[in-house]
Every structure is written in C-alpha cells, then in structure tokens.
Length: 127
Image (tube, rainbow, N blue to C red; front, side, top):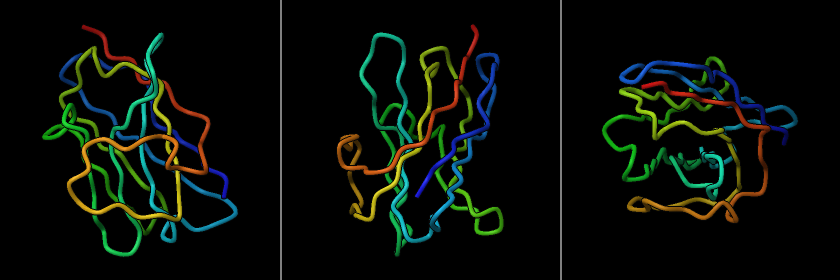
C-alpha cells in the first residue's frame, strides 16, 4: 500500500489544521494507521494511531485533548484533526500503516512497528 499525507501548512498558535492520509494499492480499513512527526534535529515521534477492526485509538500525552484521529469512510482517509496548535507542534507529519493492531492504553508506539510510510507533510506553527 502506498500512503500520501496532505493538509499541512502554516498556522498561528492557537489555530487548527486537519491532516489526511490516503492510500493507493490497498484500503486503509484493513490497516492500523498511525501519525508520527519529526522536528528538525529530533527523532520521529508517535502522535496518534487508530487500529483496524475495532476503532481503538491511542494518542501521545503531548497531544491529548487537542488532537483527534479518525477514519473518514467517505473520503477513505485517516484524518488527524489538530486543534489549539502551538509552536512545539511544528514538524513534518507522516502517516504510516501496519497490519498489526494495538490495544488501548499505548501512549507511545515505535515507528518500527509500521511497515508503510507516506512522504510527510510540513506543519509550521508560528507564535
């Protein structure tokens, strides 16, 4: 499956963006889909994940209460709604997919758990 992340951009602190992850060569409903981000000079970090089959979602502690991950069956995407953005959210955001699943309660998942990656979309939050 090939993934494409889109929806990034420049936004002021306190603003919002909605990222989407679309797939070709497969259907996202059969995959667990995660969002990761990587800021300059930092390691790629987990943001959110939604597992296939049961709708279990997990969020990193740093984004709980601000970000939401969901599946849009009409658009066939997995979306990351990001509200109340702050400059620390500035990063390249990647979507990733795996056939594995995660139970609830995971607030940090390794990028190594995912097999397929999109190209990333830049999110810049100005202060």
